[in-house]
Length: 152
Length: 133
Image (cartoon, rainbow over all chains, first blue to last red; front, side, top):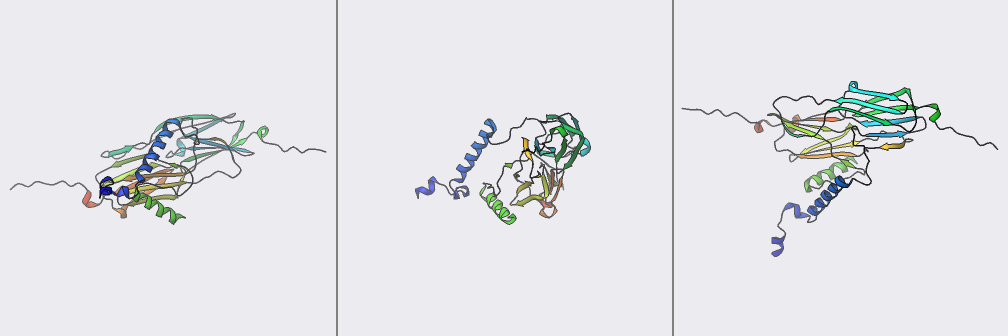
């Protein structure tokens, strides 16, 4: 049985292409890491990652800031700029622990983004839930879209 | 849907090739893992995941975490800037110790999962006294 010798009966080879498939994924993942995913997100490389959306009356700024106390977040709004700063603390664990992995980062952060139009700094609503900070910012009256009726 | 998800994930675990059953990107959450004499603790950052959307599975000493991010955006919202997406957090670890399944404790606070996995009694290191005659 020559076939048996060439393909030793390892469980992974129940599907002979499983290994190949794994390698393909690995290569694609590495390529993404080097060249960036062309369909993915473009990040500023600054913590925290943010999403900004708008509708007619508001801007919505959402930031991924897991594991932070709401009281450790500071938000300021000036004209069209929003700053989010804060501190993430990872509490010291019991002394006699041995770490296998330590990937989560801690420290202070400060990020400012500019919105396309000015916002009303008096009407900013900030909420923190499930590690996501959500800011709802009212646009100034001049920035809101107005319906124009065409006269005949 | 949930059942299908579970079965597929388990099958995927066995073959070693995790297959996605939901559209959308899959992210690897940052994790801290540490060990004491009596337990293993896993901390994972999963922002945007609600407790009911988090699934923790442990079998054959393979621990897998799956957290689905709920999209919280309103229907009328238009993108200005997008740096993160809703999708799934998925991560798998192989545990070398035997875990007492009944005493596993999981807490999800502010997007951070804290998973306490107590080791079974017999797996704990024990001091052996050497007797002399």
